[in-house]
Length: 513
RNA sequence: GGCGCCGUAGCCAAGCGGUAAGGCAGCGGAUUGCAAAUCCGCUAUUCCCCGGUUCGAAUCCGGGCGGCGCCUCCA
Image (cartoon, rainbow, N blue to C red; front, side, top):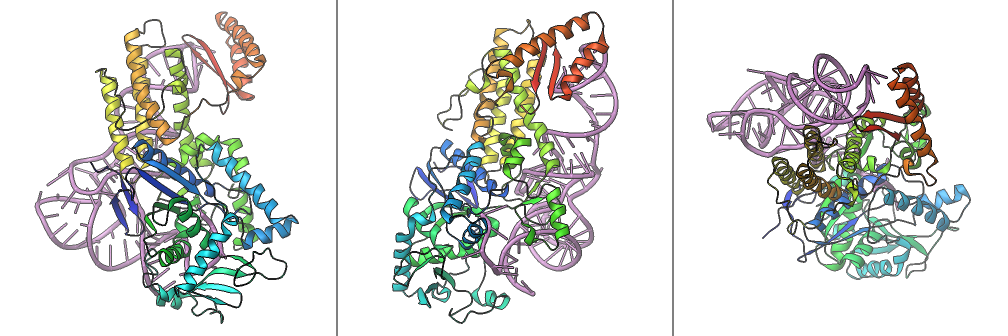
């Protein structure tokens, strides 16, 4: 049975049925960051999307390997290290750690993080092969790829070499045969870090690392290559040229490119630095809007799981509007999920997060119960999978999740599950339907674990204080002393603690949990 | 100039040939001492514009207009 997943392939510019190269297993390679300055939200888009792709493929029974490379040698790193007066390795390690920390907080699970500098020998070998086959030539300590030697050059970005040359704004370098040729190896200038090579000391060009590391970890031909839309040309185009000329085999089968992030109406990129803006004025304005906020700042206000939910709420190929306003809007939906987990806890008496995570699509045991709620849940599940099958339409899938929550909340309200009247039978139906929700949310990588809560702070002092305040407030309410009871509630709200009165007593929680 | 992507309510966003999902905001109701949370109901005769194909188009084709990306080692 061929599987139902379809992927939009940049190479063919259409959606194609997904068929892995090797039955039952899939390799995904994603272009990661150049580690010279702290990560921004734009760096998280690809990892979150492809992590979700991996989860979905795994769910569909494919053994999936997910590789994200780290470019740890590059002009920008050299310059930044100089500016900070530190070693390039030190800088690269620091930034890499920052990047990986944030990926973990977003529940992105990467199998391999190859670093460019760890693969220099393999790069030299590939460059040697390309020269031997007449696809590359050394010149003045550099080595260039000869684009005219590859007749398919331009197939990914749909360009022709003559058009490239016509539109080129760059001066034709006299050492390159053609302006469109790109560097495989760059001779070192005095004082620059360098590795020995048959063509003299130097460092690798940008594209070669991905060709080498992907073939080492996933094979010369692998399934899915991902990256931002901005990388289609020249980076991915050049990877194809190098790899296919070297191996004589097809490189990646499916090319998936994610849309870029934009700050609302801002046309500049999120990570833009002051120098990238037309004027200081504009740069400042953007910064004040949160345009260049670090991830530490962002996550302080919006928890990583919420950000992940936000990123998945839009289709991956669309540009994502970023900013406080969109985040706040989507946040409402996310908080309803969290509120549901609390409802589940109160109704069932055990943690929602203890329910089983997504397993296998085929081996899944559907709740046998024929209650309308469960049937509705199964219908939602069907739609969810339909969305995901269609080029990983996480936006549609997220919408379905919201509908399931609504159905569950309605059921809980109708059957008065929180009150003593709720029957065990109804609760079992509720639990069965919640299992469907659990499966689907974990498939998206959201709501995996309970949120870190101050309610359960280690010494429990806060909880004891709250118990006391709730008791006092309850007394005030019974005496109809509402000014006092409101003062307690409002006062707590002002310091970030919300109180909610329900039939079963007053609940409280710290803002942002 | 070249190569692409996109344009659906106040906002975000699905739908991709069969008669407009969902969310946010807003309004009305249930519940509440009042709130909050939750639930119910209402909110696009219409999908940037103009042509064409079709029994039928937001969906396909042609032409405009508008926004964006890349063509410069940006995820």
